[in-house]
Image 1 (cartoon, one colour):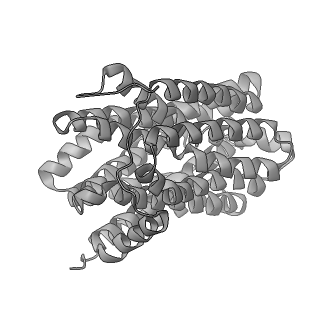
Image 2 (cartoon, helix red, strand yellow; image 1 turned 30 degrees about the horizontal axis):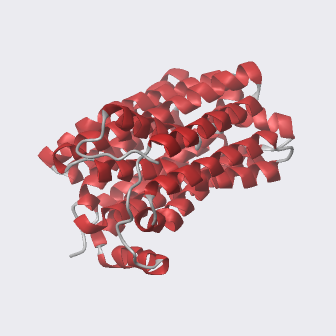
Length: 390
């Protein structure tokens, strides 16, 4: 029998939610620092191995939209456990892959099942009383961001020492243990609706149709996510080539730049409350444009690459927090569905960014990828300056 929680969830349970969100989200990013190692092992070209991060992000975007109604219609604990078991099996399949085609299919499955990360957050919100909900959800979101941050570092270091397959096998074992722990410790959470699955999906379409502020937010954040993914999905390949000639560990160390994004989250939220989210979004998008443009002008500078990574990641994360502030104020009864629309659009943008960037890298080099990111983030800035519809 699962435990029953009354009042504020105990710290150990909140820590489990944060750990679960972080480990599930980390599964999306293990592949990025080890693309070169996987390509060499499987005899794949740059364009072929670029399909791996693309399908991972596409699977996540699709899964958020397709599975969002299940969180409202089913016991969320059951949803979390089923997804985690599936994720563990998908990671194992990726580690066993002997061809790019099999790895690609496994990567799609990883993306679909890693959406468990987005189930831990509303589960925490559902269990927390109103007076402590913000703090509880903020703690879980910090875990999610740290999972993204540390995943690249861990993946690169493990791959350099033990090989890329061990990255996937190790992750599969960790997720399996997390599934067992979640089954034992996460309390049952009663469904919030009995509406049919199809009706809940259609309601998301209606929200996107009726709320112009939602459409504007999703488009701008998707464009910033396009640039974000274009960078991270090709960074390892670029660092391995002249003039840098660096390995997977170096690519993983760049993930430490994500600490800036994790640190800026509460600051961006406070600024959005004080000065308005529009100001934060425009400033964040401008930082992204400047970072990518600078790296395009001086593509061989390792120092500028490090600084640019920190600055553009900070801009993307600040914009995301401000966009969430906007959409959560649109309809209090539909926040989970509004969040699903925003996050799925982000990962659709990431999927497209990974696909286009791998082709751009093979044709025009790292400078071409940076120009691509500058163009996408400039388009996001235009969207935020475009007059809002009534």
